Length: 283
Image (cartoon, rainbow, N blue to C red; front, side, top):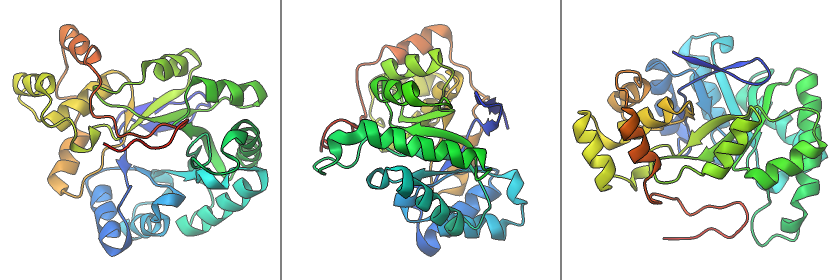
């Protein structure tokens, strides 16, 4: 599997497995299937409630821990210096590991409506300081962020000693967040896509369907191929083993330059309705 080198020198697989909603016994079996399908990058979070299920799948796979790249995230309502440190310690226990390959600030602000919602600049800076210290202690290999836009990153980087290695964003055709992507590329921050196929919201898109037909593939696979070709780490999720296998094979198709521009120029489509600076928008 192709690897991507982060700005700290560590390497991350170009294709990973998203574990959101993979919980309990059924979730454990899904993650174990993903490991058997060849995934070594496993993306979880405290808020997903499945760190112990991921740990069980890794443990029972028989594959050495060092062959995996495990990501977890600090809950948005636990931002702060002391809470970041205690939360990581709990995550390490749940994941049954001595270190995390990548630990992210999950969102730049607490949940909308909380009293500390507007205090995000201080909270982010304090949390990041804790992550930097835990990285120096060897508890985390790489540190990064999720759902951070340029103004959130600027606040962090103005006070940081370590530039984020990754920004994990909702990215898929029709919602490419170009301002954030351009900022990250300018500063050497690797882009990682959650919801890379738009959670089914792109299934009827005319542009994507015409391209999928042209390249003899499915719309979900086309979305992953596009992101992969743009140099973005992708985190597809599926409970279907055959689809898991298909989602890992992204070098079998290469979109032409003309078709890349067709996808890049799509009108907005498939957005999930979550934005870090405002209340969730329901469709």
